[in-house]
Length: 228
Image 1 (cartoon, rainbow, N blue to C red):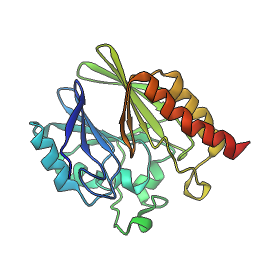
Image 2 (tube, rainbow, N blue to C red):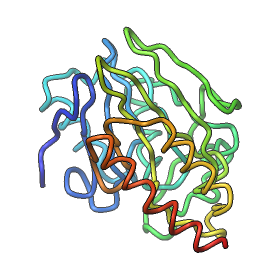
Image 3 (cartoon, one colour):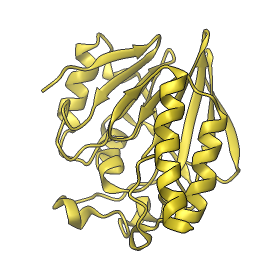
Image 4 (cartoon, rainbow, N blue to C red):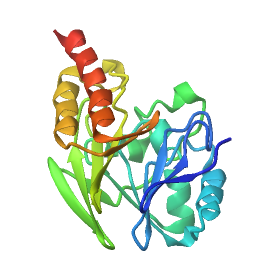
């Protein structure tokens, strides 16, 4: 398996299909003084993720919060483990909270894993909200389409904007909570952010800004064909 690595400044990649478990989404970490995670993987790789954090030279006891981009199992499976062992605060959009707290609609059955429901500490309910962790202001944007409560996160570090865009590639399947028409609007929102670095939900890192724009536009055009 590949090793965890620094993406830019205080942003790190700590998990993913080639880094922690084949069923995992890409899992990112921001060092804000405390440690903030973006998503948690499918649930089979918790100990590996902790090892990866330690490999990067950080103490897992500094874990403060996990921001959940959406409530599919490959993104939420380890939430309960982080919550129980490190008392991390879970942050998610209110429209995806029922799935996180009950396990219904997570898709766990497709992955053959047991999901342990857990309590969400902060429920987002606005089009855009800001959270401050240490020196960084994280912007959380509601981008429905993949699921009703999907969110993206971005943060400006020095002269670069880093976007955690979650599952830009989809899939956009209505039976899994998707709305392709809403997704079109959401992808345009992400393009308009003009990010320099994209941390995508399954396919890793894209940069510079021109490549980020090209990547998102590719899936926007697919959605336009799907909904035209």
